[in-house]
Image (cartoon, rainbow, N blue to C red; front, top):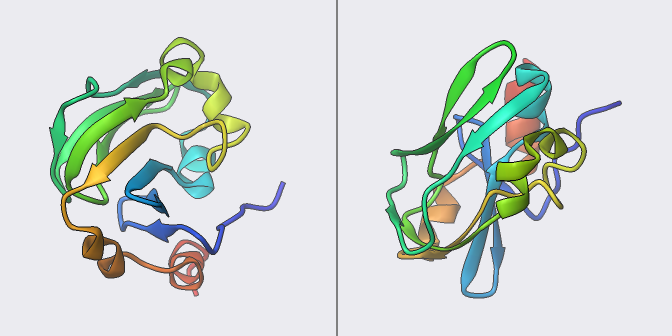
Amino acid sequence: MPLSFPDDCRYADSHEFARAEGDLVRVGISAYAVDQLGDIVFVDLPEVGAAISQGSGFGTVESVKAVEELVAPVSGVVEARNEAMLSSPEELQNDPYGEGWLLLVRAADPSELEGLMDAGTYRAKVEGA
């Protein structure tokens, strides 16, 4: 299955995506990161109300191959977390940009999104162009 890189998302070097949705930002990991991790067996996310900071860790994704720290693409307060990913982390592999989202964050500074890569830049980075 070819990897997808939706144009409405911005991407961090650490392979998280951020999608602006009104006052909120939906955060998850890219299809490339999911592909590299392989079978995902555990996801650890912060509680609702927790503050996260751009560039700092906010949780982990564990696969049969590795444990990877999740790095916040934006700073803000967690408004919601995807409880389904905590109970069924393997679902992350099916739809990382849709049902596999991780957090909804009320961004402290929405302009932080502008510092992330657009889809074309991120695709070139992960495809080695």
